[in-house]
Length: 66
Image (cartoon, rainbow, N blue to C red):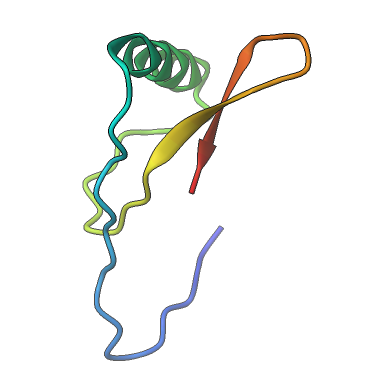
């Protein structure tokens, strides 16, 4: 899909949130899985948003974008 940006709008990139090492490893694992399945692809865009983990009812972790 395509997100239309107003003319003159500059890129916004938020700094990643600080997180424990085990959360960072879980995020890397989930990103690798999404890449392997072809759901996402590498990007070099100047736009960026931080990610974090949210615990699901079953105790597993869901990666979300803020």
